[in-house]
Image (cartoon, rainbow, N blue to C red; front, side, top):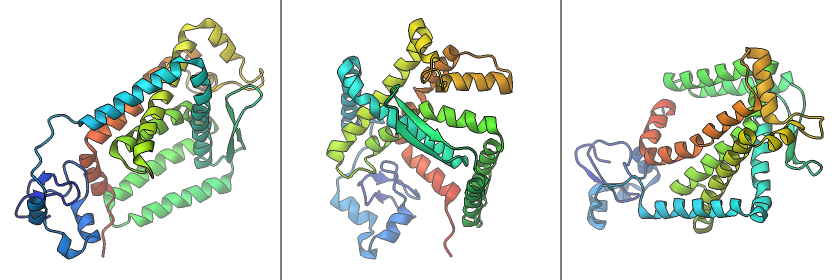
Length: 313
């Protein structure tokens, strides 16, 4: 966009103030858009004459976004209330749950394979022990990222912080186990938040008209499923007793392992009910974060570009 005068965003037509680097509505970065468009097509004043001026929205959501959220939430509530639809859709939650376990295990040097458990129900992730060669390979990946951002001190600092946290976790058996076990329910909710943001921002879909409503529905269904699971563990003694039995008495379930590790290694005395309360609270965070990220996506995009942009020579 011209530095000396305002104009309209070539992507969405929203009127911009002079000197902005990103669109305040759609978040597109003008410098990247300018590189991808033919020179003749980049003209803010031309776009302004072709498209009517658009007033700044009074609300962070438009009518279409509100309808999308409302319809997805209502459909998720209805699907969860009826036992049949809840049972049919539960494998989706299991799939996300075991994917969270497996992906975090691989990232921490422990090969793992997610699977459905057709004996006791739910799922199970078959995890091997810590493999040093795999951890070294991942460490080399962090080094490669640092080299990629070598001309951007901010990018190097971000990579260094992430690599430091990874090293802190991967260097201890109990910290690896704590992260891997927490990324079952945590993975469900983080992926649900990802689905919600993708649906609101309309990114990553092949058939948006069909897949966006399904993305919102899946996000809310996973959140409701997690909240009700945690609530039953806290307030239903029979359900808690069943949960303590684990997988046929041979394997403990995730929240019990999490509570036990905290007690053994940190001295924090907690029970399954306490961890379930934490899960209930956390279940609100990813979807809320997805909505906030959508509202402020232009600012977030500018911040990410500022932190991670690689200078072009």
